[in-house]
Length: 334
Image 1: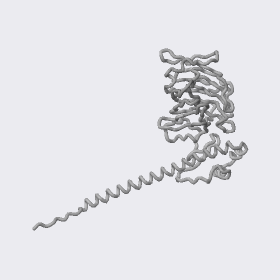
Image 2 (image 1 turned 45 degrees about the vertical axis):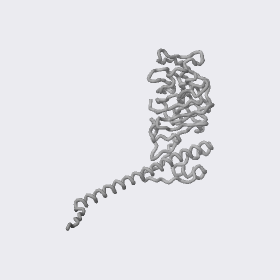
Image 3 (image 1 turned 60 degrees about the vertical axis):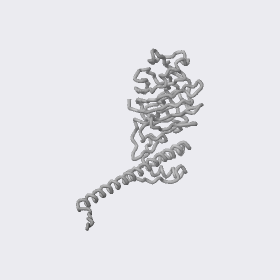
Image 4 (image 1 turned 30 degrees about the vertical axis):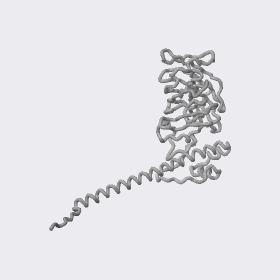
Protein backbone atom coordinates (compact mmCIF):
# COMPACT_ATOMS: atom_id res chain seq x y z
CA UNK A 1 0.00 0.00 0.00
CA UNK A 2 1.45 3.32 -1.09
CA UNK A 3 1.39 6.38 1.07
CA UNK A 4 1.24 9.98 -0.15
CA UNK A 5 4.36 12.12 0.37
CA UNK A 6 3.63 15.67 1.54
CA UNK A 7 6.41 18.17 0.81
CA UNK A 8 6.41 21.77 2.04
CA UNK A 9 8.73 24.75 1.64
CA UNK A 10 12.01 24.56 3.45
CA UNK A 11 13.04 27.41 5.71
CA UNK A 12 15.57 28.65 3.14
CA UNK A 13 12.97 28.65 0.38
CA UNK A 14 10.52 30.49 2.62
CA UNK A 15 13.11 33.11 3.43
CA UNK A 16 13.91 33.53 -0.28
CA UNK A 17 10.24 34.08 -1.04
CA UNK A 18 9.97 36.67 1.74
CA UNK A 19 13.08 38.49 0.52
CA UNK A 20 11.75 38.54 -3.06
CA UNK A 21 8.41 39.91 -1.89
CA UNK A 22 10.23 42.57 0.11
CA UNK A 23 12.27 43.64 -2.92
CA UNK A 24 9.14 43.83 -5.08
CA UNK A 25 7.38 45.91 -2.42
CA UNK A 26 10.34 48.26 -2.09
CA UNK A 27 10.56 48.79 -5.86
CA UNK A 28 6.82 49.42 -6.02
CA UNK A 29 7.03 51.98 -3.20
CA UNK A 30 9.99 53.77 -4.86
CA UNK A 31 8.26 53.81 -8.25
CA UNK A 32 5.06 55.17 -6.72
CA UNK A 33 7.01 57.80 -4.79
CA UNK A 34 8.87 58.89 -7.95
CA UNK A 35 5.63 59.01 -9.93
CA UNK A 36 3.96 61.19 -7.30
CA UNK A 37 6.99 63.48 -7.07
CA UNK A 38 7.14 63.95 -10.86
CA UNK A 39 3.40 64.62 -10.94
CA UNK A 40 3.75 67.34 -8.32
CA UNK A 41 6.64 68.95 -10.22
CA UNK A 42 4.67 68.90 -13.49
CA UNK A 43 1.70 70.48 -11.70
CA UNK A 44 3.91 73.31 -10.42
CA UNK A 45 5.44 73.80 -13.88
CA UNK A 46 1.92 73.99 -15.30
CA UNK A 47 1.09 76.70 -12.75
CA UNK A 48 4.13 78.67 -13.93
CA UNK A 49 2.79 78.58 -17.50
CA UNK A 50 -0.59 79.79 -16.22
CA UNK A 51 1.10 82.60 -14.28
CA UNK A 52 2.98 83.74 -17.39
CA UNK A 53 -0.18 83.75 -19.50
CA UNK A 54 -2.15 85.68 -16.86
CA UNK A 55 0.66 88.17 -16.31
CA UNK A 56 1.05 88.82 -20.02
CA UNK A 57 -2.66 89.60 -20.38
CA UNK A 58 -2.53 91.87 -17.34
CA UNK A 59 0.55 93.77 -18.56
CA UNK A 60 -1.03 94.33 -21.96
CA UNK A 61 -4.29 95.61 -20.50
CA UNK A 62 -3.26 98.89 -18.91
CA UNK A 63 0.03 100.78 -18.78
CA UNK A 64 -0.79 102.30 -15.38
CA UNK A 65 -1.67 98.87 -14.05
CA UNK A 66 1.58 97.60 -15.53
CA UNK A 67 3.67 100.11 -13.54
CA UNK A 68 1.70 99.54 -10.33
CA UNK A 69 2.02 95.78 -10.65
CA UNK A 70 5.78 95.95 -11.18
CA UNK A 71 6.04 98.08 -8.01
CA UNK A 72 4.65 95.24 -5.88
CA UNK A 73 7.52 93.92 -3.81
CA UNK A 74 6.86 90.21 -3.35
CA UNK A 75 5.75 87.36 -5.56
CA UNK A 76 2.81 86.80 -3.21
CA UNK A 77 1.59 90.37 -3.78
CA UNK A 78 1.92 89.99 -7.54
CA UNK A 79 -0.02 86.72 -7.57
CA UNK A 80 -2.72 88.19 -5.31
CA UNK A 81 -3.03 91.15 -7.70
CA UNK A 82 -3.59 88.78 -10.63
CA UNK A 83 -6.38 87.13 -8.65
CA UNK A 84 -7.87 90.46 -7.55
CA UNK A 85 -8.03 91.76 -11.15
CA UNK A 86 -9.56 88.52 -12.44
CA UNK A 87 -6.61 87.17 -14.45
CA UNK A 88 -6.34 84.16 -12.12
CA UNK A 89 -9.28 82.34 -10.60
CA UNK A 90 -7.33 81.50 -7.44
CA UNK A 91 -3.88 81.59 -5.90
CA UNK A 92 -1.98 78.53 -7.23
CA UNK A 93 -0.89 76.07 -4.53
CA UNK A 94 2.64 74.64 -4.63
CA UNK A 95 2.51 70.86 -4.89
CA UNK A 96 6.17 69.94 -4.34
CA UNK A 97 8.12 70.76 -1.19
CA UNK A 98 11.10 72.10 -3.18
CA UNK A 99 9.02 74.19 -5.61
CA UNK A 100 8.71 77.96 -5.66
CA UNK A 101 7.38 80.64 -7.99
CA UNK A 102 9.95 83.29 -8.92
CA UNK A 103 9.33 86.45 -10.99
CA UNK A 104 12.10 88.18 -12.93
CA UNK A 105 11.35 91.89 -13.26
CA UNK A 106 13.84 92.37 -16.10
CA UNK A 107 12.65 89.47 -18.25
CA UNK A 108 9.02 89.94 -17.13
CA UNK A 109 8.33 86.25 -16.70
CA UNK A 110 7.68 83.67 -14.01
CA UNK A 111 10.05 80.78 -13.51
CA UNK A 112 9.94 77.44 -11.75
CA UNK A 113 12.09 77.57 -8.58
CA UNK A 114 14.35 80.39 -9.80
CA UNK A 115 14.95 82.66 -12.79
CA UNK A 116 18.36 82.65 -14.41
CA UNK A 117 19.49 86.06 -15.69
CA UNK A 118 19.10 84.82 -19.26
CA UNK A 119 18.47 81.45 -20.81
CA UNK A 120 21.09 81.20 -23.53
CA UNK A 121 20.03 78.06 -25.38
CA UNK A 122 16.42 77.44 -26.39
CA UNK A 123 16.52 73.80 -27.45
CA UNK A 124 13.16 73.13 -29.05
CA UNK A 125 13.64 69.35 -28.94
CA UNK A 126 13.87 69.28 -25.12
CA UNK A 127 10.60 68.92 -23.17
CA UNK A 128 11.57 71.76 -20.81
CA UNK A 129 10.84 74.35 -23.53
CA UNK A 130 7.28 75.71 -23.29
CA UNK A 131 6.03 77.83 -26.19
CA UNK A 132 3.53 79.82 -24.12
CA UNK A 133 6.25 81.01 -21.74
CA UNK A 134 7.29 83.56 -24.38
CA UNK A 135 5.52 86.50 -26.06
CA UNK A 136 4.01 85.49 -29.39
CA UNK A 137 2.32 87.44 -32.16
CA UNK A 138 -0.33 84.97 -33.29
CA UNK A 139 -2.53 85.01 -36.32
CA UNK A 140 -4.52 82.13 -37.81
CA UNK A 141 -1.98 79.48 -36.88
CA UNK A 142 0.85 79.36 -34.40
CA UNK A 143 4.01 77.67 -33.14
CA UNK A 144 3.87 73.98 -32.30
CA UNK A 145 6.50 72.02 -30.42
CA UNK A 146 7.11 68.68 -32.19
CA UNK A 147 9.62 65.86 -31.72
CA UNK A 148 11.68 67.39 -34.54
CA UNK A 149 11.71 70.97 -33.23
CA UNK A 150 9.59 74.12 -33.22
CA UNK A 151 7.21 74.02 -36.20
CA UNK A 152 6.06 77.47 -37.26
CA UNK A 153 2.98 77.44 -39.51
CA UNK A 154 2.04 80.99 -40.58
CA UNK A 155 -1.31 82.10 -42.01
CA UNK A 156 -1.74 82.67 -45.73
CA UNK A 157 -1.80 86.47 -45.60
CA UNK A 158 0.18 87.37 -42.50
CA UNK A 159 2.94 86.27 -40.13
CA UNK A 160 3.75 84.74 -36.76
CA UNK A 161 6.55 85.86 -34.43
CA UNK A 162 7.91 84.45 -31.17
CA UNK A 163 10.08 86.70 -28.97
CA UNK A 164 12.82 85.81 -26.49
CA UNK A 165 14.07 88.23 -23.81
CA UNK A 166 17.67 89.22 -24.54
CA UNK A 167 18.78 91.94 -22.07
CA UNK A 168 22.23 92.39 -23.58
CA UNK A 169 24.09 95.11 -25.43
CA UNK A 170 26.45 92.77 -27.30
CA UNK A 171 25.43 89.23 -28.21
CA UNK A 172 25.43 86.43 -30.76
CA UNK A 173 22.27 84.77 -32.09
CA UNK A 174 22.52 81.32 -33.68
CA UNK A 175 19.40 79.85 -35.28
CA UNK A 176 18.93 76.75 -37.41
CA UNK A 177 15.83 76.65 -39.59
CA UNK A 178 14.48 74.79 -42.59
CA UNK A 179 12.00 76.35 -45.01
CA UNK A 180 9.25 74.05 -46.30
CA UNK A 181 8.30 73.89 -50.01
CA UNK A 182 5.80 76.49 -51.17
CA UNK A 183 2.16 75.51 -50.74
CA UNK A 184 0.85 77.00 -53.97
CA UNK A 185 1.02 80.06 -56.19
CA UNK A 186 3.94 82.48 -56.23
CA UNK A 187 4.71 82.60 -52.50
CA UNK A 188 8.01 80.96 -51.59
CA UNK A 189 8.35 81.77 -47.90
CA UNK A 190 11.37 82.22 -45.68
CA UNK A 191 12.23 83.03 -42.08
CA UNK A 192 13.50 86.02 -40.17
CA UNK A 193 15.56 86.71 -37.05
CA UNK A 194 14.61 89.81 -35.05
CA UNK A 195 17.32 91.75 -33.19
CA UNK A 196 17.65 95.07 -31.35
CA UNK A 197 13.90 94.87 -30.83
CA UNK A 198 11.59 96.38 -28.22
CA UNK A 199 8.00 95.33 -27.53
CA UNK A 200 6.04 98.54 -27.15
CA UNK A 201 4.11 98.33 -23.86
CA UNK A 202 5.20 94.66 -23.83
CA UNK A 203 2.83 94.02 -26.74
CA UNK A 204 4.19 91.34 -29.11
CA UNK A 205 2.06 92.79 -31.93
CA UNK A 206 3.88 96.14 -31.66
CA UNK A 207 7.59 95.43 -31.95
CA UNK A 208 10.09 98.03 -33.09
CA UNK A 209 13.60 97.16 -34.24
CA UNK A 210 15.16 95.18 -37.08
CA UNK A 211 14.74 91.82 -38.78
CA UNK A 212 17.19 89.85 -40.89
CA UNK A 213 15.40 87.61 -43.38
CA UNK A 214 16.47 84.54 -45.30
CA UNK A 215 13.84 85.34 -47.91
CA UNK A 216 13.26 82.78 -50.64
CA UNK A 217 10.53 84.89 -52.22
CA UNK A 218 12.99 87.75 -52.72
CA UNK A 219 15.90 85.42 -53.49
CA UNK A 220 17.94 87.45 -51.01
CA UNK A 221 19.24 87.88 -47.50
CA UNK A 222 17.93 91.26 -46.40
CA UNK A 223 17.33 93.56 -43.44
CA UNK A 224 14.11 95.46 -42.86
CA UNK A 225 13.21 97.93 -40.12
CA UNK A 226 10.12 97.20 -38.02
CA UNK A 227 8.01 99.92 -36.37
CA UNK A 228 5.04 99.18 -34.11
CA UNK A 229 4.66 95.73 -35.66
CA UNK A 230 4.93 96.90 -39.27
CA UNK A 231 7.81 96.13 -41.63
CA UNK A 232 9.42 98.76 -43.80
CA UNK A 233 11.19 98.39 -47.13
CA UNK A 234 14.55 96.59 -47.14
CA UNK A 235 17.47 98.80 -46.11
CA UNK A 236 20.08 96.18 -47.03
CA UNK A 237 19.87 93.47 -49.70
CA UNK A 238 22.31 90.68 -50.55
CA UNK A 239 21.56 88.51 -53.58
CA UNK A 240 21.96 84.75 -53.19
CA UNK A 241 23.44 83.21 -56.33
CA UNK A 242 24.67 79.70 -57.09
CA UNK A 243 27.71 78.38 -58.89
CA UNK A 244 27.62 74.61 -59.18
CA UNK A 245 25.10 74.52 -56.34
CA UNK A 246 27.36 76.52 -54.01
CA UNK A 247 25.78 79.77 -52.75
CA UNK A 248 27.48 83.15 -52.79
CA UNK A 249 26.25 86.48 -51.44
CA UNK A 250 26.56 89.78 -53.34
CA UNK A 251 25.46 93.25 -52.26
CA UNK A 252 22.42 94.38 -54.26
CA UNK A 253 22.55 98.12 -55.04
CA UNK A 254 19.55 98.49 -57.38
CA UNK A 255 16.97 97.62 -54.66
CA UNK A 256 15.33 94.97 -56.86
CA UNK A 257 14.36 91.38 -56.13
CA UNK A 258 16.52 88.50 -57.27
CA UNK A 259 13.65 86.13 -58.05
CA UNK A 260 15.53 83.96 -60.57
CA UNK A 261 16.93 81.65 -57.86
CA UNK A 262 13.73 80.75 -55.97
CA UNK A 263 13.53 77.23 -57.40
CA UNK A 264 17.01 76.23 -56.25
CA UNK A 265 16.72 73.31 -53.75
CA UNK A 266 19.27 75.03 -51.48
CA UNK A 267 16.44 77.03 -49.93
CA UNK A 268 14.75 73.89 -48.58
CA UNK A 269 17.88 72.63 -46.80
CA UNK A 270 18.51 73.35 -43.08
CA UNK A 271 20.60 76.49 -42.66
CA UNK A 272 22.33 77.97 -39.63
CA UNK A 273 22.44 81.76 -39.34
CA UNK A 274 24.84 83.40 -36.89
CA UNK A 275 24.26 87.08 -36.12
CA UNK A 276 26.73 88.91 -33.89
CA UNK A 277 25.86 92.35 -32.53
CA UNK A 278 29.00 94.16 -31.34
CA UNK A 279 29.00 97.39 -29.33
CA UNK A 280 31.68 100.05 -28.97
CA UNK A 281 31.21 103.60 -27.65
CA UNK A 282 27.46 103.40 -28.13
CA UNK A 283 27.73 102.29 -31.77
CA UNK A 284 26.65 98.80 -32.80
CA UNK A 285 27.41 96.62 -35.80
CA UNK A 286 25.84 93.40 -37.06
CA UNK A 287 27.97 90.61 -38.56
CA UNK A 288 26.27 87.74 -40.39
CA UNK A 289 27.44 84.22 -41.21
CA UNK A 290 25.32 81.61 -43.02
CA UNK A 291 26.49 78.02 -42.60
CA UNK A 292 29.79 79.47 -41.29
CA UNK A 293 30.31 81.55 -44.46
CA UNK A 294 30.76 85.27 -43.74
CA UNK A 295 28.17 87.43 -45.55
CA UNK A 296 28.47 91.06 -44.37
CA UNK A 297 29.21 93.60 -41.63
CA UNK A 298 26.54 96.30 -41.17
CA UNK A 299 26.35 99.39 -38.96
CA UNK A 300 23.02 99.46 -37.09
CA UNK A 301 21.45 102.94 -37.58
CA UNK A 302 19.35 103.12 -34.40
CA UNK A 303 20.45 100.49 -31.88
CA UNK A 304 19.00 100.12 -28.41
CA UNK A 305 20.99 102.39 -26.05
CA UNK A 306 23.31 100.82 -23.51
CA UNK A 307 21.14 101.91 -20.57
CA UNK A 308 18.03 100.30 -22.12
CA UNK A 309 19.51 96.84 -22.73
CA UNK A 310 16.90 95.28 -20.40
CA UNK A 311 14.20 96.04 -22.99
CA UNK A 312 15.96 94.16 -25.81
CA UNK A 313 14.32 91.11 -27.40
CA UNK A 314 15.28 88.71 -30.17
CA UNK A 315 12.85 86.57 -32.10
CA UNK A 316 11.84 84.35 -35.01
CA UNK A 317 9.36 85.23 -37.76
CA UNK A 318 7.65 83.21 -40.51
CA UNK A 319 5.11 84.36 -43.07
CA UNK A 320 2.68 83.69 -45.90
CA UNK A 321 1.58 80.08 -45.55
CA UNK A 322 5.03 78.44 -45.77
CA UNK A 323 6.00 76.52 -42.59
CA UNK A 324 9.52 76.57 -41.14
CA UNK A 325 11.07 74.04 -38.75
CA UNK A 326 13.43 75.49 -36.14
CA UNK A 327 15.63 73.10 -34.14
CA UNK A 328 17.28 75.59 -31.78
CA UNK A 329 17.83 79.28 -31.08
CA UNK A 330 20.89 80.21 -29.05
CA UNK A 331 21.69 83.56 -27.44
CA UNK A 332 25.26 84.05 -26.20
CA UNK A 333 27.38 86.91 -24.93
CA UNK A 334 29.37 88.43 -27.77
